[in-house]
Length: 261
Image (cartoon, rainbow, N blue to C red):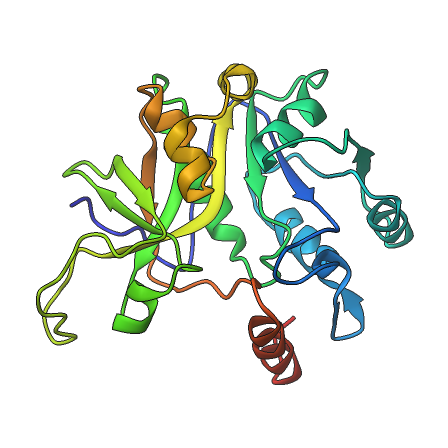
């Protein structure tokens, strides 16, 4: 496995231009309206936006939404936002509509429920594309450290090859461990829902019909794998704290109350 990059910095140098797009839906099966959930006096979407702005390799940040309430919230804090169609089946499709007329070379898909995302993770995903001109798509992973996370369907798992390319993503435990020993290094990884694409590839990917495994697992990244495209994963050590449920939101609020910014 390639060595894990240092966790304090991610030097980035590339002639390509990059934009972070945050697809944000108001409707959510587990937590409706979560992009507007209050965290330390600000909506969640603002925290995500500000952290994206802090990435050194990013030229612009844009929220893509189908809901005027989210549009108004982003406008209120001074962010850039675009209204997209309401019938997109995935964030990838919404992302493609948002960037179809933009001139950025690289596009980052950042989930709207990651108010504690490390800006360095964005830089690392983009750096993977900058370092390999043939690479079309990259994403982030981190080690799974508890059996509970391995079993949790809300924690998406990824299996990778010896060069860090994704073999498969699943909500089920992969790989299967007969004995999960925390004292022994394991090859189980959590997928962090952050993607970087070459813009032309993103538009092509969005033009493809949803695939069987994508629909079964409800994981849009499987569309790329099912069509034979490779996804480079970059490992980070710090486990992300995303918001899927009310319990997650309560946890994030506690973290901010303890001093996160």
